[in-house]
Image 1 (cartoon, one colour):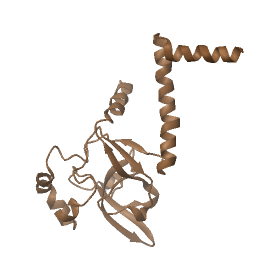
Image 2 (cartoon, one colour):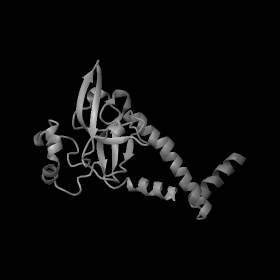
Image 3 (cartoon, one colour):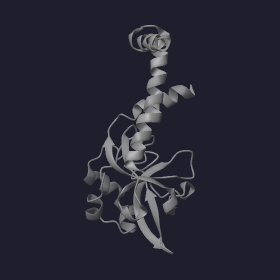
Image 4 (cartoon, one colour):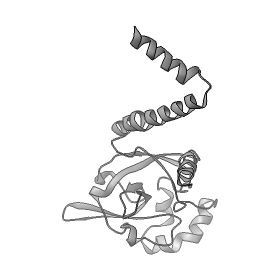
Length: 193
């Protein structure tokens, strides 16, 4: 009986009280549910520890250009690395994506990632990196990748994106949700302040 009353009082405090403390508790509970239940569940369903990532840099932006204009400005690098206009036009997310977008990832085996796919990998940086696979090759029965951000002028060896082994793969992007990642970016910046 006492437990039921405690449970009822707690429920009313969280959902029906308008106090500042109840708002703080509600926010904290929502955070815990999203992080440890929903995010974890999506990770199990999608086969990756990072089922949803917020894009925190502009390395994949096409700066508002239509595809043909973007290609005209960037074709030299791609053509010098054996990627033609026609080939790039068939790539997923050929128009890139923007800082503040959310990307949904599926865990995938290295053999299922092709040149042009958007992949996330554990880089030599604080956070995983989401870039386009621009080269795929095999050595001693292991598959390796080279990636490049569409908005970057070069491949960054210091990130380790010039030779990414299978063990570094986090997932492959399958869906873009515009702007929703700004919630995470703004929240992270507020915490830093």
